[in-house]
Each structure stands twice: as structure tokens, then as C-alpha cells.
Length: 339
Ligand code: DAH
Image 1 (cartoon, protein in one colour):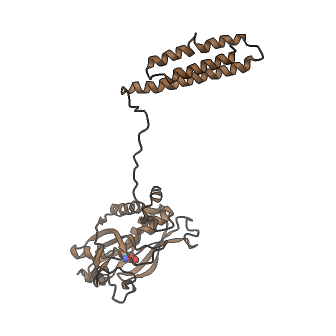
Image 2 (image 1 turned 90 degrees about the vertical axis):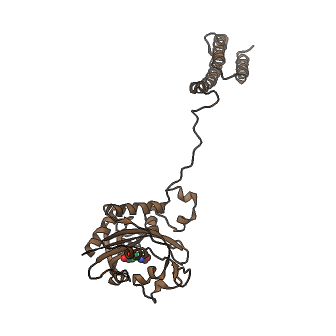
Image 3 (image 1 turned 90 degrees about the horizontal axis):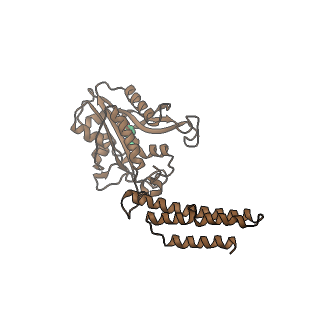
């Protein structure tokens, strides 16, 4: 029989032995000795090589070496798998296999931003309060000095449930609820959902989230408002961020302002996101209007304070580079997995 035939024979014998192999260590060892032992079949074939013509020998040697590593690999694989099984002392369970992955959820990006903002103000001594999402015109508008003819009252902006009852359009209603039931000093933040009857687009949705802030005490100044909100901006966006306050109008604050932060993308140089201005608008704020104190029966001559309101979605969009506000509410797992 030629050496090639002999190699072939050993190979097919090995295949048959392997197919019949049980997972007992002894049987594996027997096979190892039979093929790879000092006097095993592979060793015998190497002896046979001596008889092969010298010019044929390298080629045959190569084939034989391949057979040897093939058999070694198979037997090693068999015995390590087998070892692991017996090591665990549980014959039919392989504890070394990776487990079935359990999908772990992540915190919604809006909640993450909300939590971050809350923690900044809680550190400063603000307390958390929550107001109702279904409210009346009085709390949402009247008590906040928003007169009947104000555009914010327009049916197009507000979801009315009845003549008097509505879905709140901002968290400022919680200022009134809280002050009605508490005496100063007041230092609160009020996070929550608000609703507006707006056309749904990449920029606006029928609901969104805000955080309201209110601080009332004796001799509160605009400087304190600026200092607090400037600190907040640097905590949220980083120490290098600058702020600026632009005069604005809100019926419930006087004077009123809007706070911008230096663009977090171009560091104030001007880019497409900040529309080349170098600034991003973040929130509305101001000193509480005396009319508001009157509606909650605080003495406007005695009490001073500031208020602010910011939109969570806007900040989350800037922070995470989200281009379409609707993604936050879509429940699309591909979007949510990224946070
Ligand atoms: N309520 C305002 C809005 O929804 C935001 C706001 C502006 C709240 C100024 C305030 C404030 O407390 O002082 O647009």
C-alpha cells in the first residue's frame, strides 16, 4: 500500500473513531494513545516515510504533518470541552458558555437631562415641587398677569378641556399653586410636562417638558438671578461657557430677560447651529412682577424674587445633537439605544 493510501486509511479510521467517541476522559485518552502515542499510528507513518523516494518525501511529509495536526486539534478540542464539563461537576450543563443576554434598558434622554438640571438646582438649595398638568385659566394665565387679550390665550396655542379648564401651556402655573399654599421664603423648581396646540414639526410638538424656577425672599436682586443662572449654565454645559442676558418680555416678570449661552459647538465663533451668532437661547427669566404677588396675596412691597423657565427638549437636542424633536416621543428603540 502506498504511503498516500496509508495516510488516507489512518485518517478515515480516525474519523470513525471520533464519531463513536463518548465524552468520557478514558475513551479520549485511548484515542490519543492510538493515534498520537509513541507507537501510535501517526508515529508508524513517520517511520514509513523512510521508505519514500527522496524527491517525494517533502510532499508526503507535508501531508502527514497535516494529518497529525488535524488529529491533535480534534482530540484537544474534545478533551478540553470534556474537561470543562467534568470540572463544573454537573454533567449536562456547561457553565462556561456565555449566558443569554438580558436586554437592559436605558434612561430616556429627556429624563437624563431633567435629572441633571434638577440636581444642579437641588445643590443650590431649591426644592422640588410638582403642579397639575390639567389646570384652570386662573393658574395658567390670570394669576400670572396674562390678560384676556394676550396671544398666549389664543385657542390655537392652548388645549382647552372646557371654558375654564385647560392643559397647562407652561410650568409657571406651579409658581401660583405653591405661593398660594406657602409663605416666603420660597425657593423651588417645578419640572413637568406642558402642552401646546402647535403644528407638529422637527422643532415643535404638542407636548414638551419644562423646568420652572422661583425664588422669593426679602431683597432678592437681579444680580442673584444672573449669578445663579450663570452658575447653572456652567454646571450644565462646562466651565468655559459664557452667558448673556437680553431684555425680553414676559407678563409675569418685570424686568424680563432671555439667557443665551455661548455656542457649545463653535465656542462662540459662529456656526450653522447658532446661526452664526455665537449664542444659543436657553431660557426665559426675570424679577417676579408685583401683580403676581398680588394674586397670591403676598405683599409686593415686602417680597422680591426671580423666576425662570427652560425647555428640556431644546437643551437635550443641543446636548445630544438631536435634529428632530419627534424622536423623543417615537419610542423608537434604535434612537433610544444610543443613550
Ligand atoms: N413660561 C415661559 C414660557 O413657557 C417661560 C418663562 C419665562 C418662565 C420667564 C419664567 C420666566 O418663570 O420668568 O415660555
